[in-house]
Length: 272
Image (cartoon, rainbow, N blue to C red; front, side, top):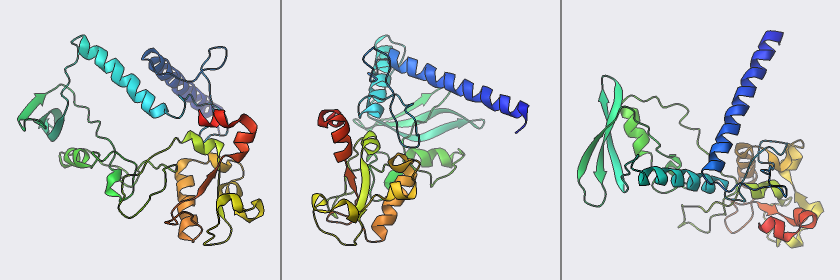
């Protein structure tokens, strides 16, 4: 790499880091209760895809707390009369004027009334469309209709197969279930993922000795282990289940073991 290219890349990384710091500061100002060290500074920990502790967090509820902070800031603006909120409304159509989005047609889900709203700028925060799959942790209302309506009006739709993956959902309990429950991604960082080395092993996990366990992420990715990015962790878990090593009633799960971290930090730390 040439010296100029290297300096340009370093400058770009520095700008991105500063943007990230500003976003964290804004979240703190909005009331997001990030974890703090004993001295009061914001704490960091490791998360999937990183080998160093560089991620700010709020217990095991970081995403939820970020949402609550944003909602609180928005509600303050509503209270000051700077924002008008329309709850329980559904977007039916994007209004286009000269090739630009200038408003929406919406339905009041309580009264059924059709409304029109004009705007200088339209932001579509539609949510994901993971519910096109049978098993998912997505909200049931995220059904891809808003994304499709925007696409019909000319919005570009890139990488439709790129959906967010959660490798830490609680296993499905039966054929009747399609909405999965998500547990904290941070739990994966402290636990060790494994399956029995023998296919169809129905023994309780405590009865399976270490020599008969396959810590497959640590075996496949020794540098990252259980801290591999979530898509890799999910793909690896599916691969083990497809090969017949899955556990539980459905065979579509793997074990997440906290015995080592409990010995190291105590059960209360893991529970927190």
